Length: 315
Image 1 (cartoon, rainbow, N blue to C red):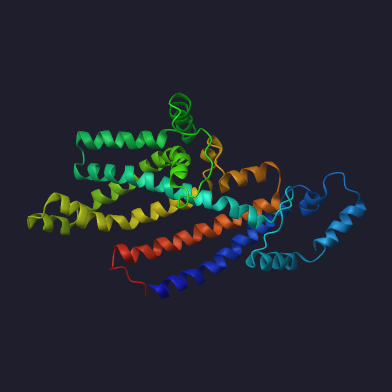
Image 2: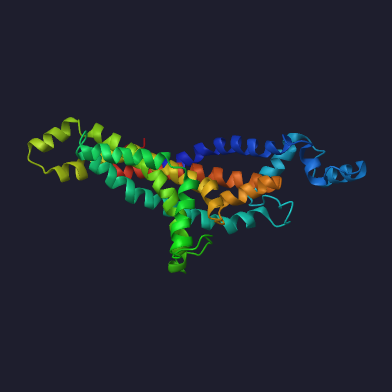
């Protein structure tokens, strides 16, 4: 499996190169180009010429891209236009909060969605299955911003149990404070994604329950709980793990709406602030980091296939 992971990482190099080219080129798509962004609208020709020479913008385009890529590989993503802080430092301040929220929301989604899928697949077509399917549809249909506002009104305004504005506290050093700040945004995202988890896992389980090995297990007198939990569930997890990985990557990419509702200091909120202030180096850095995390999660999901199903071969 180690050889497979290494090959997958090597295969990602051209993907990341093409994506980095798109991220770098986006700065040339803005009105006025990178020079106009740096000097402003009322710059004199002398100022424009000085900035062009200072940042190497008078060099060929490929030379500029190679220089930017070399710095990015070494961890230099430039400096924010407004704060003048290194972009990588700004991202590093927000990334732990985003990772913590993404993992917590995924865990909430699994805790809710997996039992719903198991119950629905065990008695397909029953009143319980129809009721749980209706709940999954409601979970997918309720907007996250609306659910977040309702949770704030009840738990923060009425009951005064939890803070309405969620900050960041490390879970390992301050578990109680971290849970108080994580609970509302994690539940908001987790309820939504639980509907997705329940639907995909139920569909996979129902398909597996029709397989010949399930009929054989039942004919041998194996109990229904063992048939579903030990045999069908393990095979149904292969496509399900892919969905879980994609949802986790989306959360880390930035649950922008939820972070805005709870004023959560995550990477998605940082990206929105950078867009609103036209801070293009920060925009480039955020998108590039999100892209790298996204592809690494995909590699991790592929590696988990061997843990779930030893029959998977990595030739």
